Image (tube, one colour):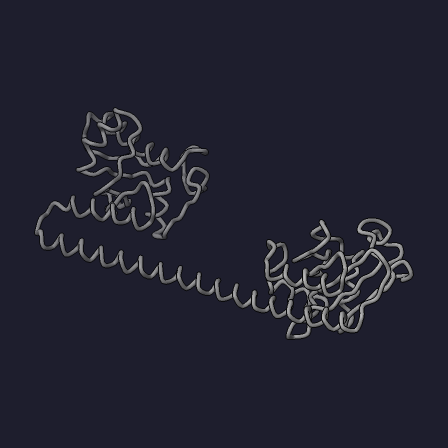
Length: 328
């Protein structure tokens, strides 16, 4: 239970696997200079490894926890010093002693959080047996406290940055919503003041506004109507040009002003009409609510097929009306 709490505390600092930072590199350089060792590390111990936030004199960025020296420093409140690892039964047979980096001397000062959790160590390592002087032990311990203070500062700074980012995003959403509401209000006022039955310009302006507001490329403004049998269908009042060839371009230019009708309910459009709910489909081509649309089709193709079906039905009935068959 204590170890789980310690690991949870380590995760709260969100420092594992982050890039090198000068503030921490300064501490390892100072530790190596004060203790006169070729290797100095800021080691953070998680469930399976010790990971080095900063390192001097060592290429590896982590080692397994079960062979680490630092895991033993987790269990004591003070500095752990190993004068000669070959003479210590805990370490004499480990690969870090018998192989690279051939550790002989180790001293690690714990990194203890304000609530008492030991995250790891600021440690120094030598390839020859030795001992620290009292002044060196005191200096290493003081540096470890400063490393912990820097971790606290980093955590506070990251928390503030995340809070600021979230606030800026929220303010941005509010501003966009306010801009949209104001723009819609202007469109309504303009439409009323024009006193015209033809609202083509107003709907076109509204569509342009919605596309800009949502960052979308294609869209339409449509009215929900009901057929004689009571089934809902869409009639567009403004729609972007989705034609993919000259024939469809001519059809779009001929009929877009009068409006296209989408009557097939077995589509994503139909799902909105029949459920009365907002529908968001990040992959329209594979969305199970798409009905009979072909898997692998893009959003542009889906819209285009709807327009093509409208053209097919219009021509099949001798050009009578612009009743679209929906997205096939």
